[in-house]
Length: 84
Image (cartoon, rainbow, N blue to C red; front, side, top):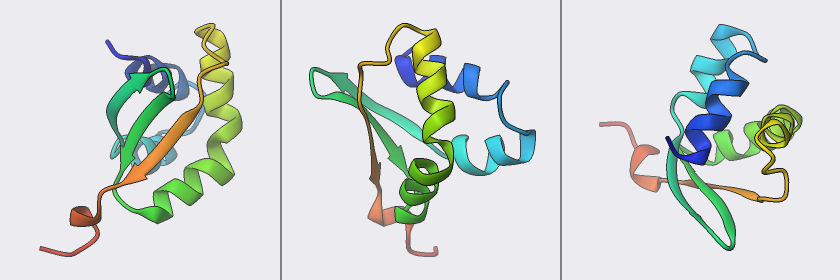
C-alpha cells in the first residue's frame, strides 16, 4: 500500500461518504520521492477544492501516519478534462 492509499484509508473515516467518493476516489497515486507526494487528480477544480477544503483532513491523516513533513502536490491530467 502506498502512502496516498494509507492517507485515503484514514480520510475515508473523517469525511462523509459522498464527499469521499466525489473528491478522493478519482485521485491516483503518482509518486513519492524526496520532493514529496504527487497525486493525480482529474482537473484543476479538484486541485483547488482538495487544497482549500480538505488540506486539514489530509494533514491530520498524514500526522497519524507520522508523515506530516511530506508535502502533497496535486497534478491534473488534461486528457481527463475533455469529454469523450
